[in-house]
Amino acid sequence: MIAFNSLIILIAAYFLIFLQSAMNGVLGVQLDLLPALMVYAGLTAGPFTIAALALCGGLWFDSLSANPLGITILPLLVIGLLIQIRRDLILRDQSFAQFVIGTAASAAAPIVILVFLLTAGKTPLIGWGTVWQILVMALVGGAATPAFFWLFGRMAQTFDYREVVTSSFRNDREIRRGRN
Image (tube, rainbow, N blue to C red; front, side, top):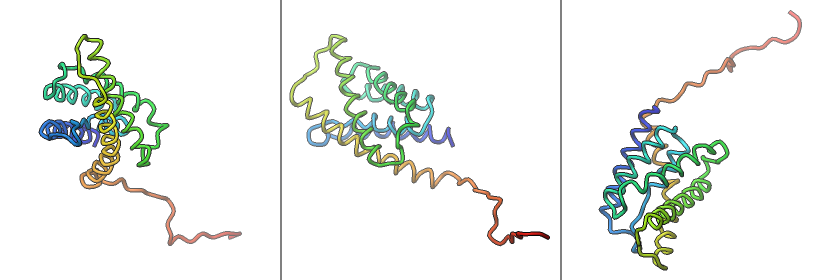
């Protein structure tokens, strides 16, 4: 199931990036749902899946955007690995925790990419519109994170087998107490 989960995450990233580039945006903002998907991968998958998602998703996203090729890889990788390292402390089954972490990751990724662009000598357009775009991307990414958990949970229920819980206790067993 681990390989299947990794494959499903990469296929979802491919289709998400395609849909993001085909859409005109929401409220004047071109959405980026990769950080929300990286939160899901960081909380449920291993380091290999996180690295594969960061590499493939970053290259796919950069090839369809105006970003220099490869600039999105490092922020996604850092987000995924930080979440994966601390996933024992995170309440990953709670929708509110998923929303908060998804919002933080969706806000941090474009800010770090913007810092990378500025340090590379590029001149992106920065203004009040940038604040609006980051705010909308953070809120949409935060709302998408619990949706990813729900969607992938339903897929796991559909395609994965359930473990059989065995117990040595039987309801019809009689327990004798006292001296025999």
